[in-house]
Image (tube, rainbow, N blue to C red):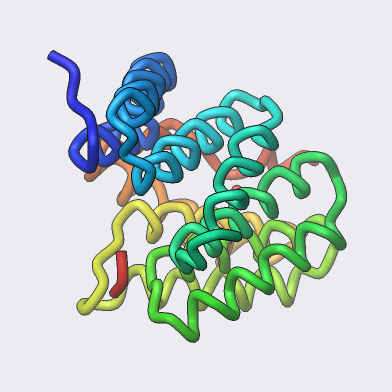
Length: 216
């Protein structure tokens, strides 16, 4: 049975987090088609954002979905999706190697997330910033951003386990780049423990080869 509207969006995001990209895409496509059929304009951005995340996970270009989100937010000023678009654009630009533009998108999104209280998006943006800083490379700045994300995600008032796992992974990668292998291994161990507990899609990820990581 298909699910759509908010329940479909949430279920699709869960499938994406578990790594079932085909099922997530099928559900998102159905949700978007249903929203169009019924003129549920408020829901277009939900499913375009989900499809953009799936494109990123598959190494594809999410620009067409980002353009739809930004067309919507230019008319509505919906801050959640303004921040989401900054996050997804930063991830896309980082994957393309344009770290300067990626940082600009991430910093803008983080400013809005902090000001407007979007705590989960704030955590995701800090993780992206950590990876951008690592790519420059600036390991100390990467460590700082990842640690802030980790502290926020693991705080008792938040308890965002998915974010905790990704933040710990980014933290470990930054420490590895700084040649602090003891702290890197500690971070990777924490990430793995959280992933195994929640059956996260990254449960099998390991640290780099040592020879060469809603409102609150």
